[in-house]
Image 1 (cartoon, one colour):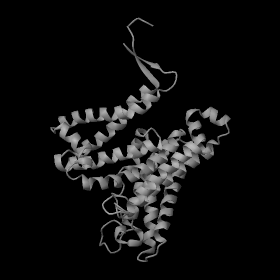
Image 2 (cartoon, rainbow, N blue to C red):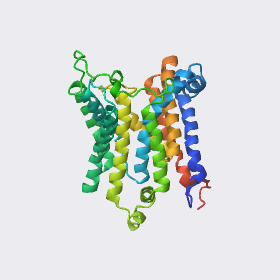
Image 3 (tube, rainbow, N blue to C red):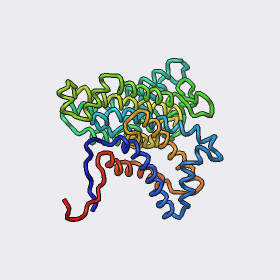
Image 4 (cartoon, rainbow, N blue to C red):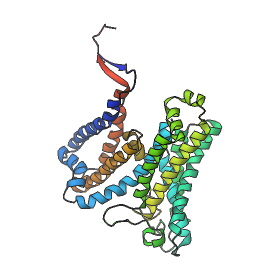
Length: 360
């Protein structure tokens, strides 16, 4: 029989190997799923993972890779800070939406003026919007000990209704006869977020994501708050004896993750998305959870995981277009990554033993 035996200390080798194993198992299970749908599994995997980087049209897909990876990395870095401390913000999607609304509202309030300070004000507003939305579950947790998982998750649906109200009401383009949605911010130069270098996919959101990775790395490795975050996640009792203020930690981690998610939303609405619309949110806040865990909650790992997940987005869209693979199958393929990661992660803390029946 097979028995799991707890390791004296977590295996460092398996900690780094499990993400690679999870990716391999995802390819295997995804290939079987594609085969069941009547598609060539090898061609499907090649289309998703190879073609966007080295395929015939890679020159186009490479730029899109950074466009997709930027918001994922930015949100995941913030989530990872809380996850490391045992604070579970599952509502980054709502904070992403509210940050986009706040940022767009500031920009549209100045329309059609052309001032250099409009975009910086939108950046600040986007961060504040995400932070304020994250403060709701944070304050409820510290004041009434509510479950931040449930509160933050349920607030996503409130944010979606808020988004619909803004697209149909206060932020609706007055020149669009009856159509929902705001003005196109890409066409409003003072409030737009274009590519910094044409064809590269690099815009201010990508730059912000890289800055967030560097900031998080320094925070965790060089700052007292980073030590408190890691200590609280590893041993809450030791953290309390060590003088860590749990209330301040919850507010800091939730506020930071909310602000970064709000920034991601603001950069997206002023760049690739272009406008506040009912269908603005695209699940980045939920996908970033996968990115955070796939990156082992480490800033550098998150950077690599964000690029990998963006690759599945780009490759998945290519597979839908060229192989007619259903969008739901691509979403299931992405979900498999988290499923297998959580499954094989047990090997970091346990070793597998084969034991004869009847033997203690």
